[in-house]
Image (tube, rainbow, N blue to C red; front, side, top):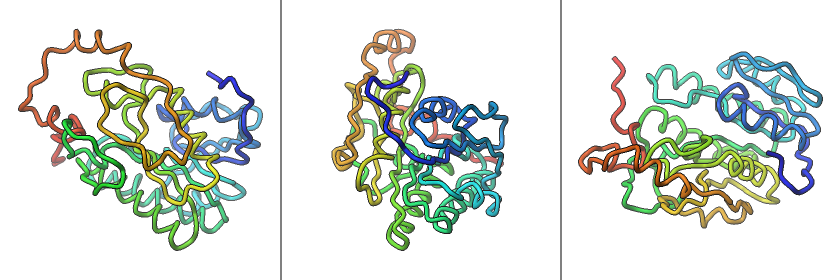
Length: 272
């Protein structure tokens, strides 16, 4: 869905992970706003439309990633593994890969990155508390650890090199919430677009961390410290509440997936 207002020019933007679930959502939404949208993944991508370039590049290939960054004004970095996996796979895709993105940005003078972090950076906080992004991280697995690394990397590259980043701790972005937990973590596709555009266009961001979540009645995350971005979610999980609660029995209050914000991620692994 295109926004009602006239699109803002975002300049030349690289979208990594463009073949992934959220990459496929954002690609057509960002394209009309960009002078050029360069999209990349290791999975198959649709051919380039007008105003696009399609380049396949493994994130762990530093030279290939550096080429991706050449001539770009900004990056929306969604690439990598988005589920809990063995550490060696996470290491290459999410840790080495994200380092390569920031090194490419430094080398080519890219000054703004929107980094897809995750709520799993703080997954071991409880569901009966509200937290802000300024609180200490409590990752719930290898995936969360890798995203915490990415946030620290982003802060380092801002402090050392002046590359601004908005780290998006994305909740659960789907057409609608899939279960009871997502009544608190849901991020609509329209609000995802609003968040990414705000992150690319806010005049000054430094290194900002913001939770990617819609205006849900149940809330675990306080985004007040990131209000300078101008992100105002407009959707809510509330219309889906009755159906999700009817579909699931009363939650087991002794289940770690019910106790902690990370849900099922807190009890995944070990991978042997």
